[in-house]
Image (cartoon, rainbow, N blue to C red; front, side, top):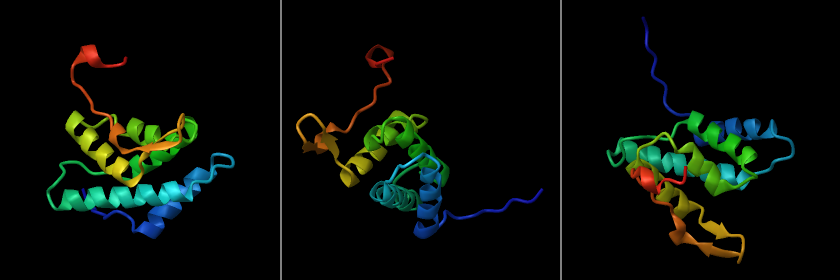
Length: 130
């Protein structure tokens, strides 16, 4: 058996992959969102290489976020949050804090930006919404 290791694609290639996927969903435009996703993933990958994180965001995970974006009504924050469900509580919280720093949550009711709304995750089954 032979094993090949391949690094993540560069920003240009990863952006192209995500844009091509997004085109499969009729009339969705999100160049700014894709740029933020690629930057966010790269910052997590760098932190992983430096030993600051035990997990990483893959290109496949970014494609899941794009699919979520189409499914959940172009809600950026929810799209990212749903794609992080496989990670442990500490990792989810850390990744969401990094995401919220790059893309603050906008409260659509009042039009204000709320950076402090980063969700925290509980392992307590009684506190879970479902």
